[in-house]
Image (cartoon, rainbow, N blue to C red; front, side):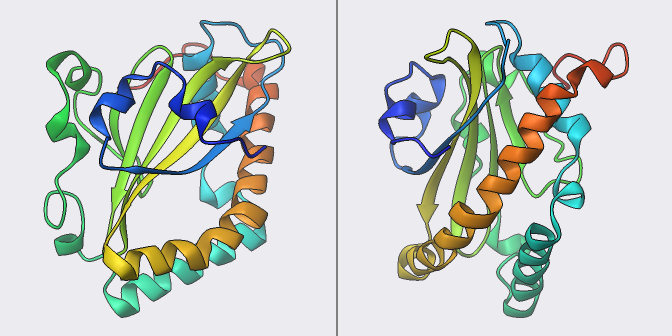
Length: 204
C-alpha cells in the first residue's frame, strides 16, 4: 500500500542523517500479520528465500528485461556511470558502527548493493546514468499492533534526463512493480515457517 512521505521521514531512522541531498520518491507498506519488534531479520531472510525478479510475474519480468535491454543499448548501466565512478557510494558517508554491519558488500546477483543492516532498518543502493537510488527497508509498529515492513525509495536524479526518466517509469512502478512486489514479500512472510533451520537471521 502506498503511504505518504511523512510515514518515512517522521521515523527515527539512521538513514536521515546520511541522505539530506536525496529526495523521497515512494513509500510503500507490506503487511506482516503477527510480526513482533524483533522479527525484522526474519522478514529479510524470508524475502531472500522468496526470490527476486526471477520469481516475479511475467509482466514484471518483461519490464525488467526491457529496462536492462535499453540500458545495454544506450549505455545507461556502464561501470563509469555507477557507484564509485559517476557517484560515490553511500557507504563512504557511513560512521564506523554502520560500516561494520556489512563486511563485504555483495549484491548476490541483485542490481542493488548492500550499504548497512541493523535490527530495524537496512539500505541498498544502485547508481546508473539516470539516477542514484536507495532502497530503505524499515520495521514499524502498525496501527493494528503488529509490526510491518516499510520500503522507502530515495533518489538523486542525474539532471533533467534523470528526472524525465523517473517520471516516465513512475506509472509502471506504482501499477505493476510495487503491487507485484507486495504480493511476493507478503507471501514470503506467510511462508517463513518453511525456511531451512538457521536461515532466519541477517546475512552479512
